[in-house]
Length: 402
Image (tube, rainbow, N blue to C red):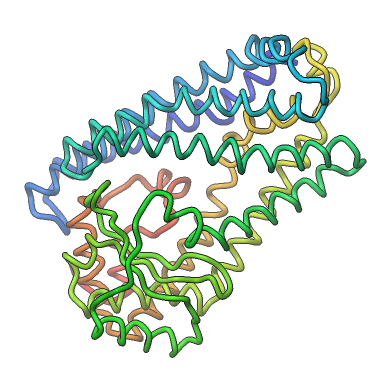
């Protein structure tokens, strides 16, 4: 059974993911030999090189992920269960400790890739502004959040799994509720742990943004500027939170590089998602995914755990769930991407209606230039990995000739 599980993971996730990355790699290599589009020739080449470097890193992560999966299945799970067998008398606390140990070790194994991405690769291309102190502090804060918040979530989840017959149903509902709660408190409780947020000082821009929000009935508790530049030089903006806890967040890098009209167009696009209730649809999609993955976890046979030398206890079921999550989400991505890209076109149309097609198109081009995003991708890679349509398609929909 364990052998078949590894084969399933390899054939249905690791190998297809590797193939997609290689297809994208070859596509970018060929595109770089053609005439530059949307970017200057120099930036076009630099964006291509950066994209290729990220794909190399992704391939290494795919390979490492498969190795780690095999090690967990054949050795790691039994080792953790044996190691922690006599440390805690409370059964639920013991199981929380088992899952937490798995998550903590998984985080440790991901650090080299995170370090290379943020402290070496992104610095080489002028994106990352992080110091080693900020990098380490972020890691420690993440561990504390994992321990406090993650530990509490695991305790409740394992309790539900221990006492309820249809635990997979209630477990999925509980986790969905936690996701909604985290989205609600993220702007005011979680995000400030990592960044500073100051009220927007530009009264003219603030008035325009508030006018936009009033036009669609969007209520927020403020417009804030985030000190994104202390970590990264790329541009972005977002609407965070749910209900009355929503807020508008502008990266300080965005304010420096995009005109007022461009900002209004970009935020108009984001308001389009609110207008068309895309947030509600995204929650429904997340709910479907959670119910699917919990149902699969609840259907795992006893024989699988017996062959692994394990008891079928909630902790081990959850760890198998975490291990299989990338496989299940991988095949869920095309469906999510399809609806997400359609939503982006709708949001573009709405954003353009609040400014103009030309203003939004030029703002999008500016974002691509500043973020050095390579403007061409393989169709199959787009299908699996793109939540936004390629920029050329968005510009065509806006009747803009690049």
